[in-house]
Amino acid sequence: MAEVIMTCGKLCSGKSTYARKLAEERGAVILSVDEITLTVFRNEAGDMLDEYVRRIQDYLYGKSLEITAAGTDVILDWGFWTSSEREYARNFYRQHGVRCELHYLDITDDLWKQRIAERNRLVSAGEVSAYYVDKGLEEKFAGIFQPPDESEIDKRIIIR
Image (cartoon, rainbow, N blue to C red; front, side):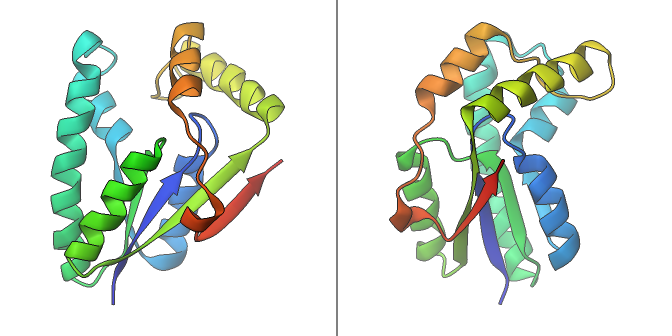
């Protein structure tokens, strides 16, 4: 039976890279909020970004049910930064009879800062399509992120 894998971790912790590797291994489909927002809005969503993200997530929840019903695993590549987001997702899939797992990418603060700097360098050079993480965005997500409790984690990936 197909299942859903939720990737959880800080901004720039390696979730998208992990999702691509896992998708290749499992023949899974990745559903990415960032991919959609960057494709549709580029970096122009402004103050509406959080609302667009919410709408896209709602759409992707439904799409994930279609894909798993067709027998293919789904990887949700969008962070699950808060315990309430993780609880909502688990309840949603439980109600629909779909097995889900949380894979947590656990990164040290020093490596996290290095990855942010590297991403910003690549974005500035036009080598990747991603959000530039300025100090305000870094602080916003650092303030939002709630590491999952051990009881929430199905698989921990330690990034060192």
